Each structure stands twice: as structure tokens, then as C-alpha cells.
Image 1 (cartoon, rainbow, N blue to C red):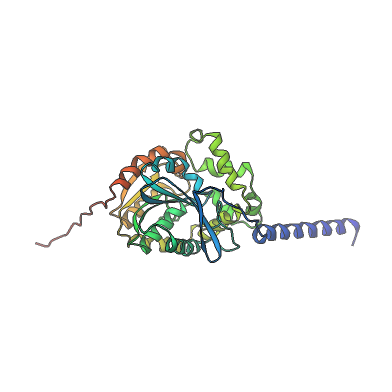
Image 2 (image 1 turned 180 degrees about the vertical axis):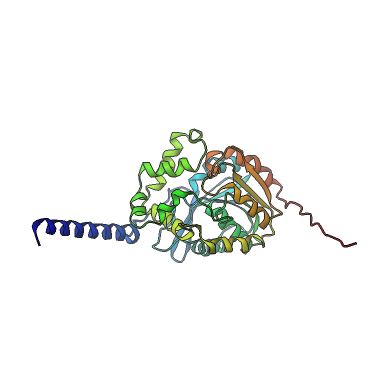
Length: 327
């Protein structure tokens, strides 16, 4: 073997070892413990030895807010501030996000449902309103189906799974090594994810963008995000199993439902609203004009325009069943 061939072989060997070590570190590195801010509003519920963190503010009937699969409960900062005059607001960090523990697991929808069911079993409020966006919009429907006596109403914002179509950029999450590199916290990818999820990024202050980015930089925060994307999506689109699970749960929900969908959603296109309507005909459904996927982040005032009256008087839309009579 000549010198050039040896050099090429050594280079390729080092490259392969480096990639393997990077993959091992990304998925199996033990994250340091991240303590939630030390204040009276912060607390945890322990499920299977793992802490699920949440913050509480306000007083009144309980409202649980579940964030998207992108950042953490900080996404609801402005909505929570508007609700806490009338409600006790619980801002929950999903397992693997924010200040919750980040175990080395596959963050599938079934895992999140299992963990959040155990969370609800220990939740201090007997009855509560449930609000979720994106993958947590899906999760909220599943939880409402499982807890008909405890969930008073469910609000879901651009849920994932009422259609297979996805943003084509999500394909990159399915590519080994490349996705891990891209999901290592960096401003470029953060801006790409956020700006593609809103219609007008100018609506977000630079201060709030920095707060969201800080959540991306928490130890191992990106691991859960990538795991969710890989377990719920494929190159063809949303996993069929997820869509089937959502449909099965949606038709069984008997609580009042508020369904909000951004007209300019590029992650879960609004065309999926037709199928969602057919699954939940008694839902109160509104299209959020000139708004993207992260409506709760981009247009909190618009979301509140529908959410506040719904929480004040949650009702199911009357469904008229037409019958055909033979003469």
C-alpha cells in the first residue's frame, strides 16, 4: 500500500471514529442535572424516577398548558400572563424539555402519553382545562380521551397527525449524523425552525427569541426534539400509526373542544383541518388568519381572542344529523 492510500485509509478511519463518538455522545451522553429556577412557583412531579417540571401562576380554575416539541413551556409566556388574572395556570415542561429530566429514551407519542398520564394521576387539581400546541395538541386530545372526568375542556392548536403532509425540511431529521450535527444548538438552525413556523418573524421581540434560544441550549434539550421528530415522522410524512392513534382518540372525546389552526401553517398544512373537522364535528373550529404553525408564540393575542371566551364558557358545537327518509 503506497503512502497516499495509507493516508486516505487513516483519514477515513479517523472520520468514522469521530462520527461514531459524536453519535454516542449525542444520544448516550449523561446530561448534568438542570435545576429549575428556585422560586415558589416552580415544582416537579416524579414519574418513574424522572422529574417533570412545572410552574404555577395566578388563581382560579386550573389550566394546564403543554408546549410544542420545539422548546419548552416558555412558549406560553404571553398567554399565561393573560390568563393568570382569572385562572391558575400550570406551565408544564414535557419530559426531555425545559427543566424536566431528559432520560435516554425514545420520545415517541406513546411515551409522552404514558408519562403525562402518570403526571395527571399525581396532578394536584382534580379538574382542569387542557391546552396544547403542535405535537402537544395531539397529546392533549389523547389525554382528554383518557380522562373524561378530569379534563374539563381541550384546546388544540395545529395538532400533528390529521394528515400525512409535512414541511419538506423535516426530511433532514431522518438522516443519521447529519441531523445530529444540525441539531447541535446553533443560531442558524434555531432561526430556521422558528422562522418557518411563523408567518411574520417581526412579531417576535429579540428578547423573546433569545429566551427561546436559551431553552435550546439547555443540556440535551435537542435530543428529545430530534427523537420526537424521528419517532413521529418519516421521509413520506407523518407516521401512519400516529394518525390512526389520533383518529381513534379524537372521535371519543366528549368534552368541549376548541381547535385553532394557522392559515399559513407550513409544518401541518391547514388543508388537514377538513379531516380534523370530520373526526371532531362538535369542536369549535377557527382558522387563525395570517398566522403560522406556532400561533401561540407568533399571535398570542389572536389565540386569546378565541381561548378566553371558550374557557369562560366551554361548550360543544351542536351537530345536526341529517336523516334521509324514503317516501
